[in-house]
Image 1 (cartoon, rainbow, N blue to C red):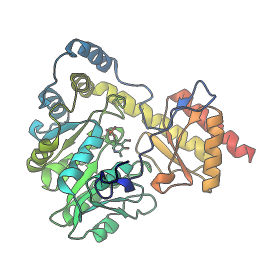
Image 2: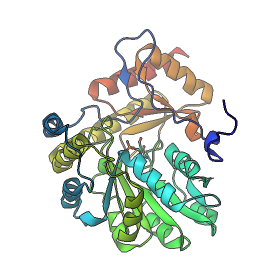
Image 3: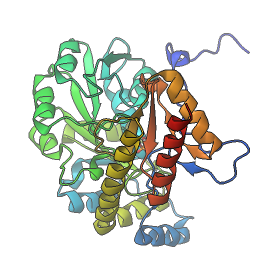
Length: 361
Ligand SMILES: Cc1ncc(COP(=O)(O)O)c(C=O)c1O
């Protein structure tokens, strides 16, 4: 290798993102509960739009995403001009770091926060700063205390992944108001649709000049495989992000499928209700066999074990039965396993298997 060819400083310090496992060697029919996917997939109307898009494969897609932005704006009563769409919300997170943080700048996120905040901050050459949580919940006082004049971005997910916990709208507003003037608060709403009646902080985005929201089609819309997300923020910030967005970052298929998905809110409501019912059932069933969890507001439960060894042994046991959950040591939670709320049969299987594991010891 030519030693003169080197990446930017810090790039080689980035630990590769590990996605949720999808296979267990020697097991044919696995149940994948490791990536917080919607077990029911996308709605029929969404699948129809996907199929229809095949007729447009020879055409370049729209560069301004006008139809999808309008559909999102109609659904959430927003200003379409202040929406930006990307290749998953990951890409919006990446744009924010690339545009607003560089060498010498700090990017804050919470102790058990989503790994892409750190990765995107480091990719931009900025300094990632991990801030302690309180009982696996975002701690606004700790975040405010960690701010300096170098802080450029503060990321929180509400509800958070992998903890499933939330903070109140009042706490989020207190955080936004308390930030130093050069810092942007990013509200990651990847799981917002799972919370009944929750505006995900959109009213705060409207009220403040320093708040941006990110959202995704990967979770409740059942489109994780297609890669579509969006952001909403002050016009000046969205205009900046659009300058670094590739003009054809989303294909016709992505745009048309997402448009159909966001217009089908009846399906979203159905998935939200079913998730809430099964999440409650699963958390109770796990608690009954001695595995507690915090009240989750998302589509997963963070199962807590007595030790790292017990969590790892349980994971091995589950894999032996073809049940794949997520180890979360990389989120500073080595004694926990994150279990996506699947369909009813998967919830029953996993609860039964964890019970068997606990009984075996
Ligand atoms: C908190 C959080 N934010 C963002 C994302 C990224 O979602 P996507 O890039 O699929 O839109 C995820 C995915 O797991 C997540 O958990």
